[in-house]
Image (cartoon, rainbow, N blue to C red; front, side, top):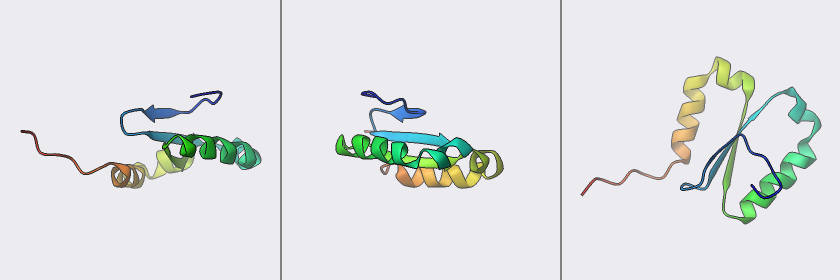
Length: 75
């Protein structure tokens, strides 16, 4: 997206999901600039540590569900 690479994106919902490993603790400034750039374009960035996805997938899914707009009933 732009000059940045994101892990996962849903264009329709303007939602970016980032999975961070240990290297991200060393590049926090870069990650912050990228999140600001995406935020200026109305994207919401949600970050998870890799080990959270592996060890607490249910919690990750719950948090993602909270980021989604309420579903609309079918006509």
